[in-house]
Image (cartoon, rainbow, N blue to C red; front, side, top):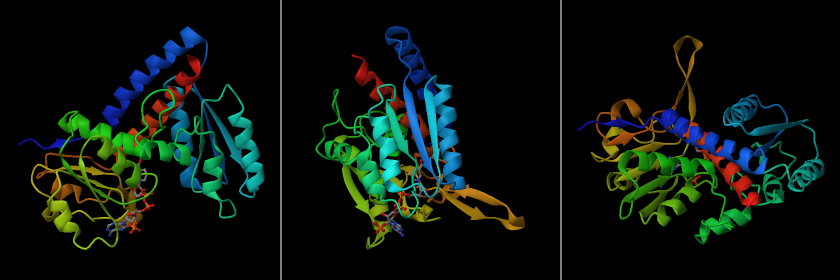
Length: 294
Ligand SMILES: NC(=O)c1ccc[n+]([C@@H]2O[C@H](COP(=O)([O-])OP(=O)(O)OC[C@H]3O[C@@H](n4cnc5c(N)ncnc54)[C@H](OP(=O)(O)O)[C@@H]3O)[C@@H](O)[C@H]2O)c1
């Protein structure tokens, strides 16, 4: 058996190439450039890197990316006013507020201020509700969070489009990854288990699963003796660990080195889920724009 290391970088690049083609078509047909507004409050270094990566990717596919860098002491009302201005701007198709926000700002309130049709992160309660009831198709279907969409794409790239009947385990229950991903897997007719910190026997849950997606931020959570042969492992975790000599390294949640020779397919960290998240942000922006065109 050849274990497949799922190359998220390559698959994301293929998706971006497709998106770039569609952006060109929109420009030629409607004289519109899909445009993403990204708001960053404060100067958290990690957030600054994420925001500039998103901007670079948007430019790569020919989209506009407009950054709004607001001071750390921006008030909640000022931020809401900026979002409302962007909600009412027909030239802006996607709005993203980089999280986390400073403590004096209520992130839930901010997310719900974004017009759900421009909410390209898919975190607004209307998009969450639409996904929850399975309203995902058509012009008013949910905008679905980017990382879960990226995970489904990677799984299908490894084992084909039909996931029906497969036993899947999602470890982690966050609103941005675990919950929407579990819902998407249900829509693919999988049998879905969701694990959290209180799960009694994670190993037993893992051993029963055809597909395991870990999104916890816990280094080494999924070990080689916890998975069955022929499982597919998607590692969403991003953890920075310290090495000797003051160096650091990015790793995921799963013991990649000991799993890669055992399973059917596995994503590396970095170069697995991460690039797909950005590609789906662009796809969501493209689709939000397309919905305004026809
Ligand atoms: N690659 C990407 O594009 C991408 C995108 C988003 C996030 N991430 C990464 O994914 C990881 C998770 O982030 P997040 O924001 O989704 O999650 P989060 O809000 O940090 O929540 C972590 C989840 O993991 C669960 N958990 C923690 N320890 C556990 C354990 N020992 N056993 C089982 N479950 C456990 C928690 O369970 P409880 O519910 O019981 O607390 C919680 O549901 C982080 O490393 C983050 O950096 C990567």
